[in-house]
Image (cartoon, rainbow, N blue to C red; front, side, top):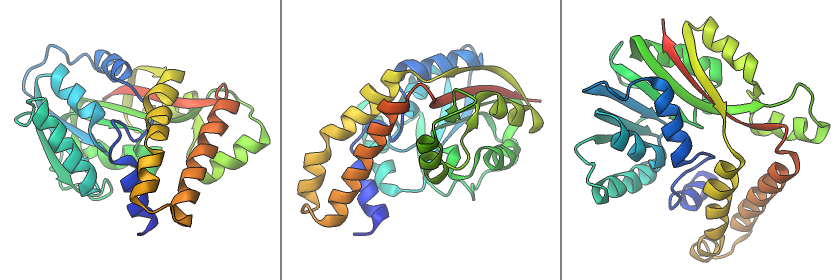
Length: 249
């Protein structure tokens, strides 16, 4: 199997493919000010298996287009939406976030948790903004430094893993430069990393290794995940994800 195939198999059984939680998705929804609006048109870009997608469908009145590149994730999302009785509120779409097939100003709300880094924060804002109605809301979470200075080991690690990481203030400046008015932001909790992402992933290691025959590539992938977790435990005071909610001017 390819590296991508292994990553998909490791993550497809998880509620989330990155840090986040039900509570923090709801907190960000509260910042949008859309709770009382009706018939919203919403897109969730990089939805994964849809942990946050289901919460959006349960919390807001409207229809959600859930976009991901990997059909395996969308199959999981569709199954979960069916079990939750939400198939009439969610439509899954396999597409690249860099080539979205939407009309200009189609959406009231663009949502993306932990996925915009794949394009780059500024590049994603520039591209996705055209799909948002004037006065529409953008809600994204992305990696961010919590301090101005960091240990060299951490800087070296994240320069490879996520070159676009920057401070919270720097990301807010980018939002303003791209024509957005910040409505609020917050830092994801430690629990969103450990209890809702890393621990569920670790509980899946043995089943993943068994499915893939414990070969070297599989063992190396698990080891890389373990190293990422250890890095977070060691340096969690220096970085997290920021959740940014803004209005298009």
